[in-house]
Length: 301
Ligand SMILES: *Cc1c(COP(=O)(O)O)cnc(C)c1O
Image (cartoon, rainbow, N blue to C red; front, side, top):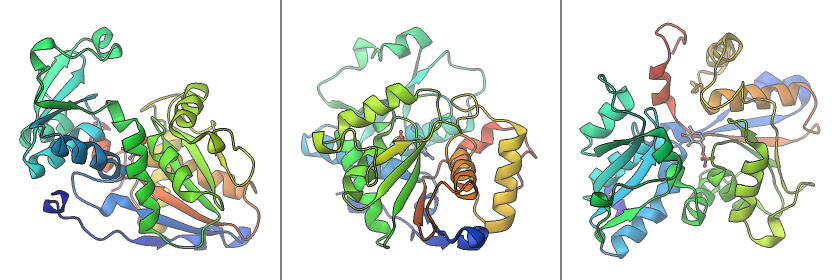
């Protein structure tokens, strides 16, 4: 049923020329090219939830997100393509002017329901929305079906990599990469929120016991120094880096996730974090639509 969705070809870009002096091979998996709306990791994280909803005979899905949520807009587009009703429960009051993300979600037929920030924290679903015909997908796709879906990301880049590198929000994608990559690969996650301890717990919870605390090579590790102050926090050093990175590689990034990822991994390589001869796959997880929340002219792409 999911074959009703059509996707573009994902490429792997070689950016090793940036790091010639470090003898490190670096490839970028361009999941951002997957689909103009259902971009990046969101499709992978959503697919098993959607399959389960369809298998259970549900006619709609309910999910959660903020005003610039990549998850919300991807869910809206995927549901439209699959003939499912979609309801997005959105954090905060309905603004006079909707964000471009939420306008896009509405354009794909998603019903938006706004709840207060306190209600949102409790994942409150207005009772009128709770019908037996609806299937609820957790915020950000966090959960085992999300991680299992994300594990398939590695199948898009079958190279002989020593490390997978990714941004971590809920940690669902990273959990999937850890499950898929063992036992030979180290997974390096760059948290984009100030939540390393909680994130570590949440990732471990999705993993089989044998992988939960593997911080030695091979295993997994969160490097906490590149969140730039927290979720969606940004400064001139980050946007300056994103512009330089685009000039050098032609790869656009977003300021919430992949900008911080590329910044962090670039610095780690330059600081000698990776042994010479390492072969890295950096997952470009998409999210470019969120850049529309920045003032115009800040980014050159
Ligand atoms: C949602 C998102 C992430 C984070 O994925 P998690 O599985 O929640 O850690 C990373 N990059 C982009 C572009 C995203 O939209």
